[in-house]
Length: 342
Image 1 (cartoon, rainbow, N blue to C red):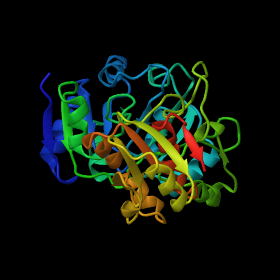
Image 2 (cartoon, rainbow, N blue to C red):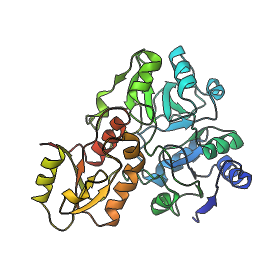
Image 3 (cartoon, one colour):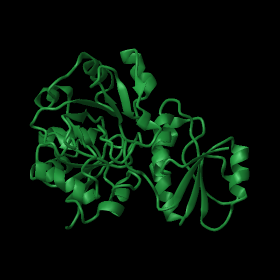
Image 4 (cartoon, helix red, strand yellow):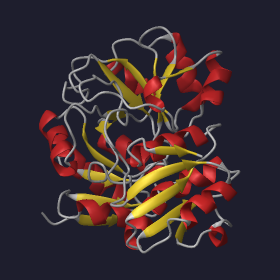
């Protein structure tokens, strides 16, 4: 199919907003910008439209999707239970990069939730995404707008590299601010548990709820047969074509390790200002002491590694504090959980 590019500078671009909403109501696939990454959106109430998301991405159907709504006032239409803890989180972080897993109503097709009786709900803060949902008047199922397994897109040009000809339209709203997908939290077992770290940090959630637990799958591989409640838990994700390994070591030790292995095709994913320590090609992803800059830059950097023809990549390990946990989680999956502790 021919993919239409809708240039939409802001949420008051009524023509662009209306065009995107019209296509979504017709059951088409439309890529929209959010504050996290670009999302491949379809009417979450339309089972056929949602099935087309999996086809376009090449995404396994046991990987659940997130339902995007315009406000918390929409939730009673789609969620069977909204506990007080969820209301506190929504008051604190919606609109924003937080997905809350709740019991769903039957109106949400099972294909959205991978057959589970729960679904993840999120209210994006990006003004264009928010305006499109409002105009369409429907909830949108929207995973990241990339081919399954590749780095998530933070620019419309990334989307077109992967999905041109596979979707009806791409709304170009510029660069995404956060750079990694939303935090996913479940309240299903009575205790708040983060299934996927993201733009809202564990520390911020703890300030609101008093406690929060980190699921083991955030930093460890789950088995292929295991049922998961959140996207980003099960499969290798975010990976460039190169073989990626994380190096958990001081800069001096890592530089020695890499320089001993320097040859054509070897590259380093490092922090700004560290390039002169390595005798190979370097791609940077933010500042060593700034997790937000790392998150915003990470997926762009992983795609840049493909552009320079890297075959083997050694990646600097970020701090696990704050949003750094989300950066580490994405790098782990890009590396297939291969990490060297030196």
